[in-house]
Length: 167
Image 1 (cartoon, rainbow, N blue to C red):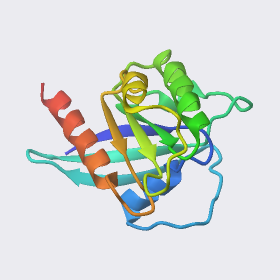
Image 2: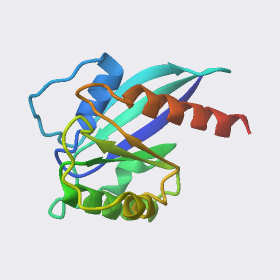
Image 3: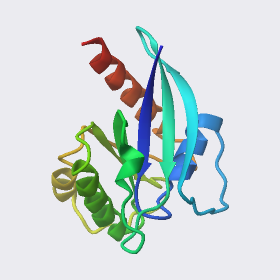
Image 4: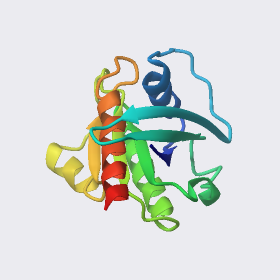
């Protein structure tokens, strides 16, 4: 079994904590609690050839006022940029956060477009969205509430990290 640090980054309120809670505990809560600093959870993911212990770093929401703490992503094997498809601004902020993270680390990055159970208010078409999500190794439309694609997101990432470790 290998152990890998994964950092979830994104603006405040996009559902980073809810995605982790859904993945680790299989639950969703409508109560919104702002994360302060970092909270670490872990879950073992079974892959075909081995298992991967994911150390999930739930990093506080990043906005223009609090800035970006590059120290949190040191040693990460991958990052997940979480955005909220009910708020167009969260995608713009997510791309900005991704660029800031790229200045510090070139680990694989996944885009999680969360809250897929709600109606989208984005004004981008599929082609524009594909262009914006181009730098990411994978893009998933997730719902922490319904659980849609949450397991797939983390299992795909675990398999990718395991494959890289075996090379």
